[in-house]
Image (tube, rainbow, N blue to C red; front, side):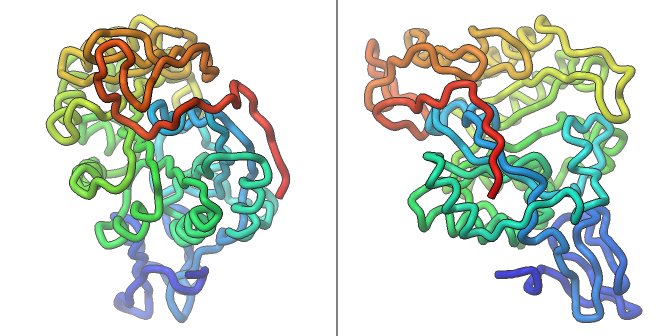
Length: 352
């Protein structure tokens, strides 16, 4: 796959319809789609950001956030530019809204990325910072190169994707963290310029597919998606769709982009959200963007023993035994090895 083999179809008037996400942008030659990085040509639609990145960094896997996927290990993270959502609260807006792809980018082939991840001792590579759905071909090719080197691939995505692209994209990923913005169609329309239905449909498909490890994150924004009823509806839907073992992360909002007048999310709100999710039957619920070691700790759902104790991404103690609680033998859902990684809190920018 390369930048010339993108998903598209002919539309009326010599235009081309992009087939990557539910927007279905119809583009004249030279015209850019909503994501900005896909452009119409006389022959079809091209991805202008293939092989280019806005930066590389080695992170702890918990920062994605993934708490049940090879804890403590290092992940090589990178993104490109552009996005197919228009979230007013975007925390990575300088990348997702960038119109200067060439000046921001480093050139890096899929194989070069896989080689770099291996040489840096990474357990996985993450497609993040901006949504990899808009650069799916580059992400898929890189995931194949990464698997060939014996490592894992991770997508951090809002899951705003066309059904025909789900299998090629998600089957290439070993883990995914889906950013479920809220459980309210009006929220998606007003604050994301998008439709919630394709996101829920994709999550339901992932639950049935069962090939990719899934965790979900919701950014909790005061006054917009933090009321008890919505948090309960979101948690109940996840429980009914995935069962009790899917890890859910409630992340704190900070004022940014076009919502600088909205207050930060207090810790008490995240604690309330976690309590609601637990009451709805979810076993593993975490908080992010705040310092609260208890909300980072993985506890046994059987006897409540602390099995993985974390403090700001660093693993402080580990008690799992072959993926089970050593006290009551309850199986803990996830992808675990005998021992955790020791990357800690480090953030290491790298050049490739």
